[in-house]
Length: 402
Ligand code: ACO
Image (cartoon, rainbow, N blue to C red; front, side, top):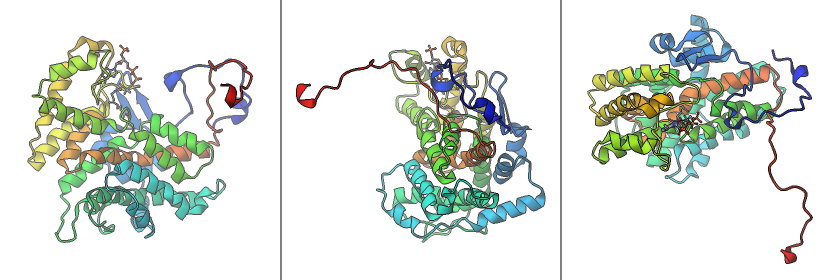
């Protein structure tokens, strides 16, 4: 545990580090990342092994409680989550209040935050472990319901209630896609591919949204409010919103005739705000190991589903061109997790503006684990300093004299 006493009253020189590029905010035992070597491990387990051999709920348990679950622990964890998938009927009234063109990320963060109102015991910072754990289970259980409902709101279809006979991903897919007048069977290839994508997104140490969750939680705000803040941080195009931007960019390249070089040149032009979306990373200065797995999965999933999406070829061409371009080589810009994930989501039938919601579904256990670690460590409230560069002292001038 961190020795809070040693940190208290810190004063003197201030480190100015915009973007916190070299500032550690915490000690954490959850995720190990070596950006130079392209290594990612959850609780010591290699991401490659977890993506191949485990399930999303197993990984969620590992991140949150620190160990891979035994068979009994896994059965109880899955059963508890299944038991809480239903949401309070009044939350549907909140959903109904959103216009149909509301971005599903905004709907998701609002519905998650509303849980603080439906479970007000979550506002008590001193509640016992069991009560905190119930909130954790509720979050994992209800987030897929909210995510699917945010989509239903957008397309104007009636919402589907959870089907607790199904596994985590199959239940979500059924809530997303089933229509009242039609029979819907979950395709196991689709459910498996989704499960793997969620594993790959499950945690990534102190990124923007996770740091947000920890900072908001450090004020002892409720876990629901903290996770809702994380969803909002993830929404931006430089973070989780990049998966939506990548597909929009690849579609734009295709619509423009497929000239990847033209877009590569635009990305290098410092007078053009365009960036190659899905490229570059604050920490990885090598291949993002998740991007490698997702690139292979994109080939597998599309061929299993018999889908031919021309933007996969455009993406590969763009990647090849960038990796052989001095600008990208010099800056160590490689494809990140989002470069190929959207292509898989699209093949699974997920609409573009739901991509970041899918990322949030995957990142949820990481946010929870990080929130829990921060609270269990008794970390102080997050409160960075600044270097003031504004006006010095001034005399007040009344309005009629300005
Ligand atoms: N296209 C073109 N140039 C880029 C790109 C890009 N995608 N990314 C970085 N660069 C350039 C910058 O212009 C800068 O060049 P300069 O040294 O000549 O000024 C240099 O590479 C360093 O980039 P920074 O923006 O300083 O790096 P930072 O660590 O602040 O940003 C970020 C990282 C936000 C991921 C950036 O690479 C980016 O905008 N990428 C595109 C968006 C994206 O894919 N985001 C998803 C990230 S993964 C995630 O959040 C899940």
